[in-house]
Length: 266
Image (cartoon, rainbow, N blue to C red; front, side, top):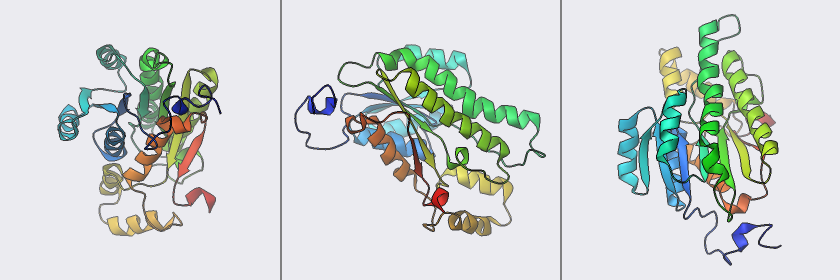
């Protein structure tokens, strides 16, 4: 295999796999949950990471604990906020579209304003953020192409009761992933990760809001629907982000990676 086929060979045999030394990454919703775990994992791999979050204080606290990271305030639904952030960066090799929200309800109980909010935060934001940072990603350099990792969900692959708007939004993210991959096949790698239920503040917030009186019962149900018998851990998703951003994944684009404890296989 030539170095043009696999850029990771250009520097000789690697002593450690999945390294991201010299690369700059930006993680939306990076101050908590899967985003926080991803930031830590990319820093561990040698990258410099921009922690983009609407909660600047939380992002700054995380950045201060890591060293090779910097907080940046970002409202993923605001073109102005995105433009300001993009103008701050001089280099971007990896974009992780992680920010998102959930919603519980059937089509009958999902009000138009709920539906619009889900599409705005979970779909339109991926479009806006990707478009805003695209020039930097396309200029990533000759040693590697820019990499985008979208955090989707198994909800974009299978139907889940009482998740009408959420399933719709995550299905759109997977469609965008594939379209971008074929639009920029030689200059950008775009992949998506589809987690099952992961133990994050996102899930805890859902339990508190919708199942305050029977949290543990619902938590047991969430575990049971994944054949492995437990919830996923944020670090398990972050490890896949690191791999997909690395040279070892140079031949992977337009792919969906399900990490769901066997949920979609059952």
